Length: 396
Image 1 (cartoon, helix red, strand yellow):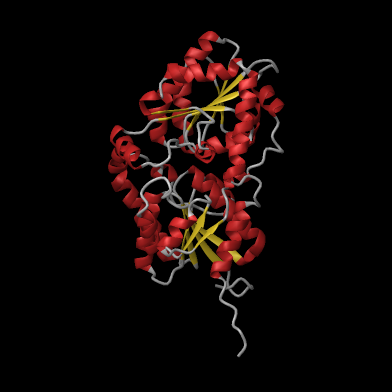
Image 2 (cartoon, rainbow, N blue to C red):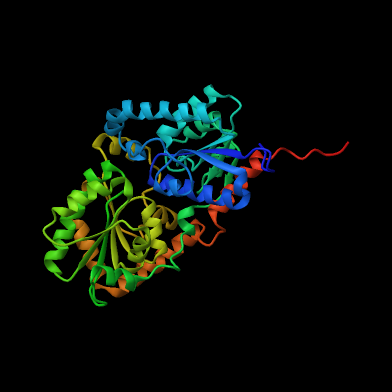
């Protein structure tokens, strides 16, 4: 590797879903801030990575897969995209490959890249959650890559034991700031008065999540709207599922405001009185914005039965795990149904003190997770460059 003008460092970044796309974009931006023209990027990503110059040869929505049956059905397509990704690496010959989250796709890619070029440094960004289930994946990853950039403090003991070098860089979701956001701007854009309550509905970023979670969310919102005609329903959507969400929202018997613009999404997170959210990175972002929430999730029955047996924590929301209790109520699988969701949301819409209490408890849990740490993208860039930097020779 050289970063002194002789030859630009070529970094391959691979993200297979929206949350990974955001991490990849942050890392690319931090690397470019440090190296300028001495770094170039190739790889797989979405809209945010494209803004940083990573031109993906295919839409990563094809790889946003969750659940056993969904994975089986999508396997041929995923393997075709894997082949495309390996071909990209063979053509571009990167100096390092950073594989972001997405365990199923990226562990296969790590093995394929190792076979393609045994000397190519491989870095995994985001560890499999071995502290929650499947501890054996720590050893699997240790055999496949050279460095782990970890976003959870509880990761390290497992990977130290497996012999994989790891660096805790922090969770980028915790570094998200809302200084620029303006709740009044959101209200003006949807024509809501200052007194009208706002419910945020966030049904996920994967097609399977929209298919499984959205019906229960829709039922909950219908119930709430029937009791509260002035309730403003705002649906911030991930670009990976925007068309599917639009199609469903178009069929609702009441008006809902679909938000795709990233700036307006941040405005919405501050403006929301309560959120109904699919489990995922968005729950951390909502908590940072001070929005109390109710969390719902559904996956395939067989997938759920297997994960439930393997899962150690009682909760799926990260700040609930950090707090050791259900700061935000969770409704998983059969419990994720409209009546229960609507009841919990109604409690919060009707009780400002309950909203304030949950907001404060969410902040305390975020502090335990590392809120206030230096920018994780900067830490990840420094860890990556330190890893690639040749050791300093000590004069004889």
